[in-house]
Amino acid sequence: MTTVTTLADLQREAWQLTAHCRGRNCGSARRMDLAALIVRFGPDHVFINDQKIPPLLVCKRCGHRGGSLTINV
Image (cartoon, rainbow, N blue to C red; front, side, top):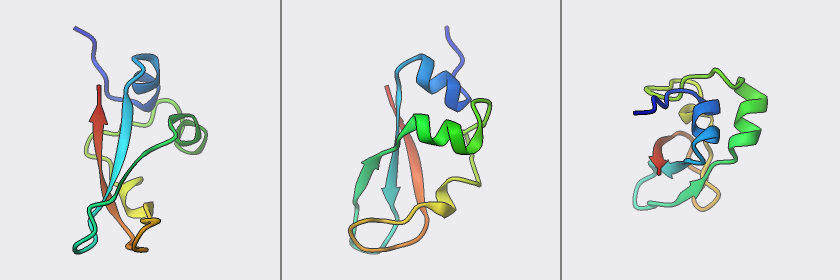
């Protein structure tokens, strides 16, 4: 069984990270650019229970700041 905890692990396994808007009545979701996240946060950045990326998310649909992340296998 493979352990996937870092951004590099996600990229290696070809899994996706999706950002979800937490704005009221929005529900927008968008796939994140893993390569860009790795450049910004580093390949060893642990995304599980991450407190750095979600607050930086800004919804392109409603403008809400902050969100949540899910993994897509």
